[in-house]
Length: 226
Ligand code: DX5
Ligand code: ZN
Image: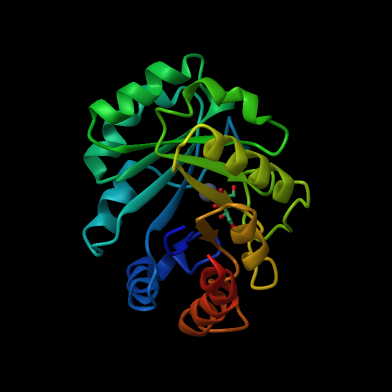
């Protein structure tokens, strides 16, 4: 397994200083920026959209991992691709025709991700596994940062990695929600190779630099074994 990637998410960051927060995680060795788009329908809150992502893209060289927690994502994909998205993640629950939407994402020149809520089984995306670049496994119910990891997620990561291995696929598995210093290695050992890091990186207790370092150190044991 290649090195585990860390994708900071900004829901608990200081959004009044977003450019500084972006530069801080980039300097601290982030691999992607994870950008949570919420529409007030698929999930209750509304966060931000393509124009904010376009502004963020101007202050970073990191790939933008855009997480669309929105209904009818097919209507919005083009604007997010134009805003600079590198990876476009849609939710299986929000897609009437997931294969067509994945094809649409790829035609726009982006990598395609398929997301699963905690209640949604792997079977919802099984038919598209060969087509997606990444599966985003929610570790919490989507909508808010700072929640605790739902323990069943670990088994789901294991099952998904086993299924991918069985099919000879090296698809990325991104775990999103509830990743902390104490469970990061467990998530990686279960098969996740991209870790979304929200409140574990953006919190009132430690600097972004220290938090990113703690997370990397926690992962070092798993990486040394693989
Ligand atoms: C939740 C978002 C997550 C969230 C993660 O709906 O998709 O990306 O920001 O935050 P933490 O890491 O604090 O659970
Ligand atoms: Zn997310």
